[in-house]
Length: 165
Length: 215
Image (cartoon, rainbow over all chains, first blue to last red; front, side, top):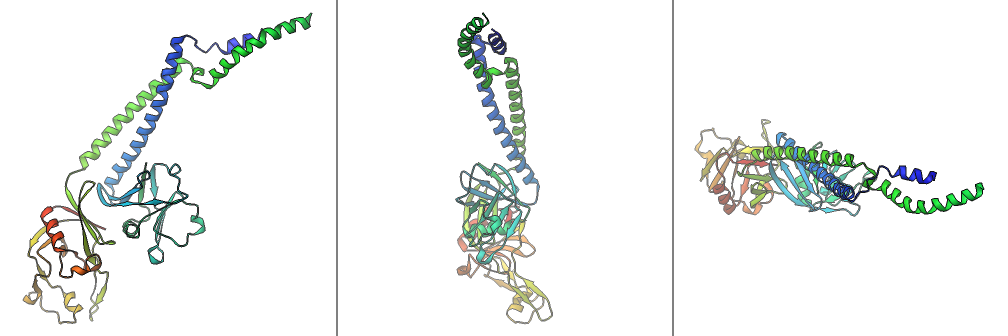
């Protein structure tokens, strides 16, 4: 009896009418959809705010479209260069979240094997023969030699890139 | 007696537990655990948040659109020696060009020159047909010739800059060249060189005021 009483108390909060159940189901579905919509709008706003900021500054920047495997070098609202890239084997598109990356290091190497490093998130490179141990785990994307040289010398350390999916 | 009561309780409670427990567990792990009012207010809050974000994004998009235009612009990539005529995201024409050689020369007096194409944002300040090259001092130094007076007619050379020139300021131009086999390399004294056909197309496409981005 005690257990029954506890169980009924436990279920007191639950509304058992069919109408309420149907409403709950609809609301739950709406909540899921709205959460996804809000996430998408926040992400869009982040990208638009970045674009707005870059239109105002005197600095070249990159936009990397991970799913299309394409990139652009831009200055304000002008496209200076379009390029394609190939992701490395350890590149996990899910790990690289949409948003801003900053060039933390420009490495000039022999035979034009330069690299642009974005912290521990990403490296943009051509074919590098030797990878420093501290960069071994960082995913990279490879550009053609010509594209890499154009991009490499166009941007400075501290320049930004925006990752989109 | 207490034993009998306990057994009776057991047989009453056990089936009840089987009936009730799954519903109770279901209630804990599903939205049904949330009071209906709370769920309603959560959905309402999300609707308001979505509307606010939509409104804000619309405003920023409009702001960005106001900053955009359909103007043509030129881009010169001095690493790959390519010039492109663009409009928005579209490449209307791409051409192989020549850019500054990055060579250094020095006169006996110590005066020196570094032949580099300037980088940055420029504007087409003028357009010339059949441009005349006014030979600068470095041209004579390069050929070990005596430097004539500034007004010397020997400085005026016709035909070497092609049929057209776009003036970018400080003596820098986009013009034609006799050395078309060197296009695609760095061979100029700082100007951007194009082949005849590309030069004509670019010249006819752009106007004074067109933006030129050199990088």
